[in-house]
Image (cartoon, rainbow, N blue to C red):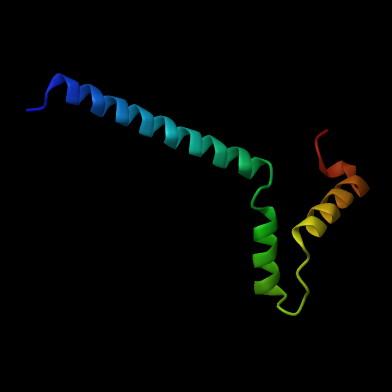
Length: 78
């Protein structure tokens, strides 16, 4: 049998663990919504489907992506 103090500590650790998991989940969602993995997925696509093509730097990728969005504003909501 565990003491009341040990039970309180265990509940505290469980609550902290739950908050950390929730924080990681929210951070992962926000990262996905903002396109955090888009460059990595694009590089994977290029390597798989177009092995001879040069891979742009991440900076060049985002520059072209934003330029394409500016050229074609009909594809976004705002």
